[in-house]
Structure formats: C-alpha cells, structure tokens
Image (cartoon, rainbow, N blue to C red; front, side, top):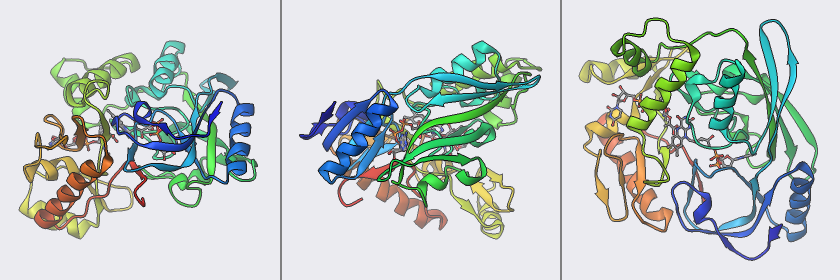
Amino acid sequence: MTTPTGETLRGYNTLALDARAQAFAEVHSEQELLAALAQARALGLPVMPLGEGSNIVLAGSVAALVIRLGTRGIEVLARDAGTVSLRVAAGESWHGLVRWTLQQGYYGLENLALIPGTVGAAPIQNIGAYGVELASCVQRVNALQIGSDERLALSHQQCEFGYRDSVFKHRLRDKVVITSIDLQLSLRPAVSVEYPALAGYFEQHGITEPTPEAVFDAVVKIRRSRLPDPAVIPNAGSFFKNPIVEQTEAQRLQQVYPELPSYPQHDGRVKLSAAWMIDRCGWKGVRRGGVGVHAHHALVLVNYGSDSGAELLALASDIVSSVQGAFGVRLEIEPRVYGAGA
Ligand code: FAD
Ligand code: EPU
C-alpha cells in the first residue's frame, strides 16, 4: 500500500505539476488510513492528506507521506419530516455527492455543483459558489488526529467557517485527517438564486420559479462556459481569494472605480472582485512561458505545460504586485502551496 520511494504526483494534481512525494499511500478504509498514519510515524515523516489535488500548487518535492483518501460511502444518519442527515466518507467525489443528493430529493447542495475535489477537502476552505457555502449544511466534521490517532468530531461551530476559511487552515492545519462529514439537507425544495450570474441566467431564460434541478443545471452550464476543465487545460480554479476590505477602503475604491463588483459582508466589511481587478490590470489571456491567465476568467491561472510550480508562482507574484500597485489591495493565493520552503 505505501510506496516508500519517491512517487511523482503529476497525475494527482489538477495543475499537472511534477513533484515527488517522499512516500505515498492510497487508502480505502479507516483501517488502511490508521496503517498509513502508523507508517508515517515509523518513517518519521509528516503527513499530507490528498483528495483530488484540485486546490494545491506543488512547487517542489513534498517531504511527507502523502495519503490519498479513497474511502467511499454515504450513510443516512437520521430523517424527520423536513430534513435528512447524512454521513459522507472523505474520499467521495463532491460533485458525485451533489448529483446523488438531488436524485434522492435531498436539497441544499445544488449551487455547489461541479466543484472538483473530494468531500473530505470541502470543509478545509469551506467551498462556496453561486451564493452558497458548504457551512450552510455542515453538522459535524469527523477526523483522526495525526500523531495520536485520536478521533475528533467537530461541531459546526468548532469548524470556525468563514469565506474560504475554517479551523483546518489555522489551529488544526496539518493536525488532522478528515474521515467523513455529516450534512443536514432539506427534504423540501428551496432555492437560493440571488447570486448575480445565476439570477441573470434565469432572467435570460425566462424561468421565474426555478426548481433545485434547474439551479443545478444552470450552475453546471455557467461554470462550463467560464471555467476551464482541468482535464483539458490544467488549473486549480481561482488562484486568488476575493479580498475583504474595510468599508472606508471599499468606498474609496468605488469612488474611483464605480464598476468594481463588491459584496457587503455581515460584519460591515466588503468583499471585492479579484477577477475584475486582475482583468483591469490587463492580465486576462496573458501567456508567459508554460503558464498563463485564462482567457475567460482572470482569476484562473493555467498550466500550458510547465513542470514546476515555480513559474506559476512567479506569475502569481507579478499579478499580486500589479493589483497592489493599481488598487492598493493585496491579493492572497487561494490554493495551498507545497514544497520549495512553503
Ligand atoms: P486537494 O487539492 O487534494 O487538497 C486541498 C487541501 O486540503 C490540501 O491542503 C490537503 O492536504 C487538504 N485535504 C484534502 N483532503 C483532506 C482530508 N481528508 N483531511 C484533511 N485535509 C485534507 N473551490 C470552491 O470553493 N468553489 C469553487 O467554485 C471552486 N471551483 C473550482 C473550479 C476548478 C476548475 C478547480 C480546479 C477548483 C475549484 N475549486 C473551487 C477549488 C477546489 O475544487 C476545492 O478547494 C476542493 O475542495 C479541493 O478538493 P480536493 O479533494 O481536490 O483537495
Ligand atoms: N469578472 C471580470 N473579469 C473576469 C472574470 C470575472 O471582471 O475575467 C467579474 C465578473 O463580471 C463578475 C465578478 O468578476 O462581476 C465575479 O465573477 P464570478 O461570478 O466568476 O466570481 P468570482 O468572484 O470571480 C468566485 C469564486 C469561485 C466561484 C464563483 C461563483 C473565489 C475566490 N472564487 O469567483 O470559486 O465558483 O465565485 O460563485 O471566491 C474557486 O474557488 O476555485 C472558484 C472557482
């Protein structure tokens, strides 16, 4: 099961970057996961959990035992008149889960259709799209603590979810392997269609009362028209987070750039569109060496054939400087960077 000699991770990340892992294991059960964790201890190696590799940048070899989660299973935990609770194994495909829940008549995940990756990775950055975040339906995240094998069951509140954020990026970073998540979904169709691109889609198609199935179809169509398929052009989705700034800062920018898309947050701060700022700086469609900025979406960096994450990170760094120079706003990279001293 465990490969103690370096294995290339090229086939295990959607940017198709070439980097070696010091050791690699693919696990299909909790027993195999426990064995891999014991192996890491025996080898004196840290552990890097891996799903589909759709939110990582490999900038050099990974000095860890990479454990790819291949566990499967969806269990109904409870059901009442209006809701159903599910436990879903970490290795399940996220989009597969969204499709399956809709087929069962379990609602709430439609807006999150077609997001690549595994269920276990979804809480890490609290995946979100088209006006909905994973946090809206998470009851619990179940995990094993790396080092002690202790089982943890984190309540919704303990996950400390935020925009592209959770406790797994802070206090529990590199400390746990998520084994499953518990979700509560609705048995009654209710849709969230306020996100501008989604509302615009229904208006354009003359759909006044969209069903959850119609939301799923619309999200899939919108995403296919804007985002490159990693199997065709390797990418990791949005390369930067949308920056959240104080209201005074947002007002200053809006006076100069009234078209800058901005989204008020619950705490009074304002989220700004990173794509718009990058686009405005002229980066959309730019190709540099083996990497570039996607022609349809300025937030997506793509790999045309580069082996190393270094070229991609150099481009990202120039984009950050250019946006900072033009708008005085500092962009943060969204995927997790591994290797090369990261
Ligand atoms: P990986 O890339 O394998 O891992 C990401 C991080 O999570 C790593 O640090 C890894 O160590 C850790 N990790 C993975 N599994 C576990 C586990 N079981 N336990 C502990 N740690 C773990 N994201 C959005 O939020 N919204 C979008 O709309 C969106 N669109 C995208 C579109 C494209 C084309 C692409 C390529 C990506 C997009 N993403 C989006 C980003 C990505 O799909 C999500 O972040 C996804 O949750 C990553 O899942 P993964 O299994 O590929 O994680
Ligand atoms: N825009 C531009 N130029 C571009 C692309 C977009 O000006 O090249 C403008 C659009 O016109 C729109 C605004 O930017 O007014 C926002 O664009 P979009 O709706 O595509 O959303 P986004 O903020 O760029 C975020 C997420 C995506 C998610 C979409 C849909 C982040 C970092 N990204 O992108 O998530 O799918 O919203 O909800 O929050 C990901 O995380 O990998 C990802 C793809």
